[in-house]
Image (cartoon, rainbow, N blue to C red; front, side, top):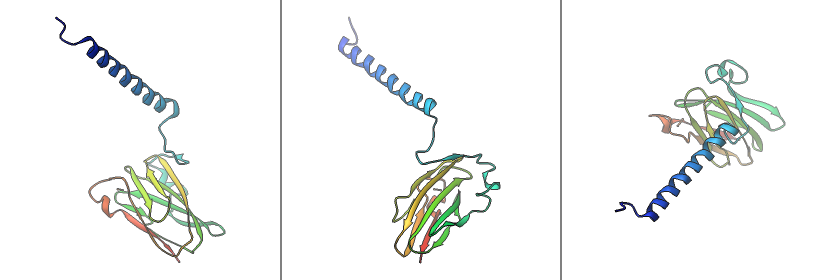
Length: 156
Ligand code: CUA
């Protein structure tokens, strides 16, 4: 006597086949396209990139008229620098690298929402047309003081 009905066998079998196809699709996209962030990224050595420009001196740098590069390092549990001040109307290019684990960065009031993976530089640009203080926070759980990892953009 059959213990499993043949239809049931058929559906069990096709489920396994679909799982296999899904796994192959994910793995092949991983190996064919490499795993990388969707933003324009640069690959760095997480152990040494803070001793090379521009990450050896994190901070705010004027790169054009009303345009700034914010070079920021993320580490448990702080952004360095944690505060930047720009004039109203400034375009800020955030360039961020992590020195330890995966962090994130959401800048309130903007579209900036980055994942910061060790070994890759995350970039996003925002224009600050209104004066005020814009909080940025770490958006990936990175340890016991994750909730303290924050900073702000002051626009005046
Ligand atoms: Cu860094 Cu959470």
